[in-house]
Image (tube, rainbow, N blue to C red; front, side, top):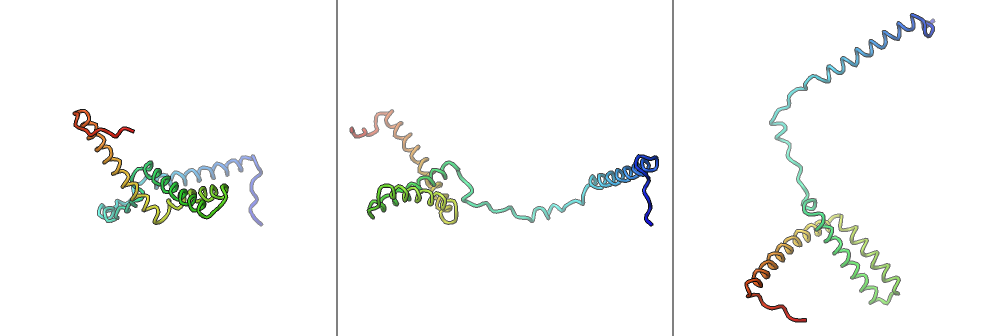
Length: 155
């Protein structure tokens, strides 16, 4: 026959609960002491052997410029769908549906695969075009200040 536990709230039951709590506290104390011990030192050469992960070139660059390039690609795809809809004789509503769908599809596809690399390439190119335009603009302003810039055609 199994041991009968002492009745609840008796002196024996409270002593049993106290012994269990102290044993549990000793176990947790032992775990904390083992966790606080320093681990085995890692070889410095082992840490140096792990190569750094190679960054994707499409992850670098300005997010704003890449967003503008994605928008321009999507707008170009939408314009092509609009022209194709006009040429094929679709109704006005269907043309706008095709243009909107083309915009969304090109915008979505520009985040994956080859179009993502194209977006990176065009964003990098666009950055250098903006830099070149700024330099030419500054040269034009400097030449105009000296009085030797060609006059803009009157409209």
